[in-house]
Image 1 (cartoon, rainbow, N blue to C red):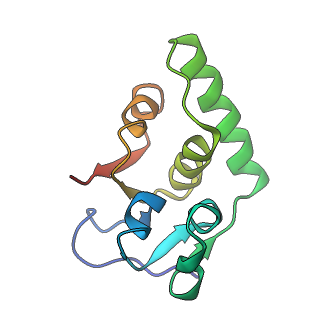
Image 2 (cartoon, helix red, strand yellow; image 1 turned 45 degrees about the vertical axis):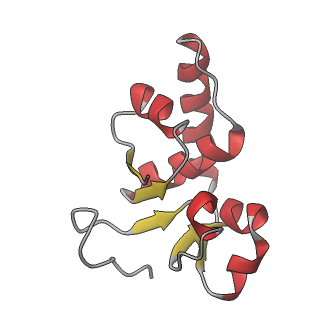
Image 3 (cartoon, one colour; image 1 turned 180 degrees about the horizontal axis):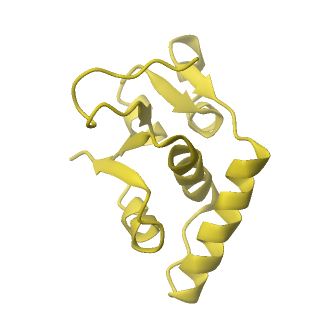
Length: 112
């Protein structure tokens, strides 16, 4: 069972994107974060996608294409994992702003 992070994120569990793993942030990430930055596998808890996550990702991808703002598959999958679990995604990647346009349940924090 995934534990909730204390503090930031309004009580939601925080998922760390590869952009922050590279800088040494530790915690919960997706398998895609590990693929992008393998050293994080030594110190992070990993979430694996379910079939529901892939279904949500396809829905998000269709919506993004309809508005002319396609985003990379890994970003869409990370977002779908967070949406389906009501988790907050911490990232430095501004592409996630486009996902928020089509998926209002997606919560993320853009770190500068």
